[in-house]
Amino acid sequence: MKSFRGEALSWELSGGVIELVLDRAPCNEIGSVALVELEKFIGALASLQRETHALIISSARSEGFCAGADLRELYRRSNELSAAARIAGVREFLERIHKVMNAIDAAPFVTIAAVLGVPCGGGFELALVCDLIVADKMARFCFPELRLGLIPGFGGIPRLKRDLGNAVVRDLLLTGRSINASKAQAAGLVSQVVAEGDALRAARSTAAQIAKFDRETTLAAKRFIKPIPREELLREIEIFCELFTRPAVNEGLRKFVESTDALPYLP
Amino acid sequence: MSTLDQTTEQILTLAAAHFKVPRAALQPDDDFFRKLGINSLQALDLLTRLEQHFRIELPDYELQGVSDFRTLAERIQSRL
Image (cartoon, rainbow over the protein chains, first blue to last red):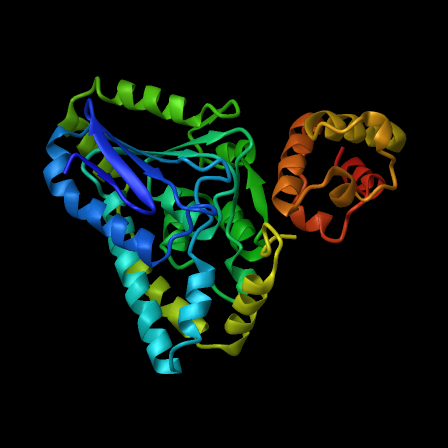
């Protein structure tokens, strides 16, 4: 399937580049609909990858790249279930999203996230699985999970540890603060900071440059510099599920869901 | 280094221009959420613009509870 248009995202392979565009209101939250469509995308890669040298993940929404997990859906579904079923449901969701993230992380072509707005939590984690992040100069990155009594659950901590220095990783996680694109670039998270509204153009230009190189050499380099931290990723799921059983989490989610603020988990 | 008044003036000018509000309509003690009609997402946008303008890094938790331009200027001033 060279192109697809779903409720949460679309993709199209053209000229060796797959453009995967997130487009679900309000800000591309990843819930059950987005997960199914991401799984569909991963399933299609086997037939797409021979013709592909680069993948660009971007957002069609001016609100931003991706606000992370759909916490409203998580809260609603959790409160419909028994405690045991709630944990089982969260674990199943995490295992499925980890498969998606790992597949993109290890994809046999170069992956580029074109980021704008405030990629939070799972949205930040989606950008982190990409080989390169091209960021709009107004983008801000944050992991607000600790405010909810949780840790990032889509593979964020192992990938942060893989890619960045301890000071930045601990600052992001333990304070929950957001950092701007320039700081993220200085920390080694972002490859390019571009003018407002220019991230997708710059990502396309980068994909065109990548196409000039021998594919096998590019893949050898990618595998060498970007190992998948599989053991830590599994451990992250365990810790997340342990934390998720606590009443404080449900209370944090309730406050989030009932808030009318645009960013209820930020100051 | 800029004085607090100069920093406040730069903030007011930048906010007025970006959020398309007449500069004369903004005063240092105004609540910027209400006066600019912005939410927390737009406040983060303002923070990024201020970080770029003043070439500083200002953690968003230092702005917790801050809603007027003068106090915002004090927080920025402490990072200059």
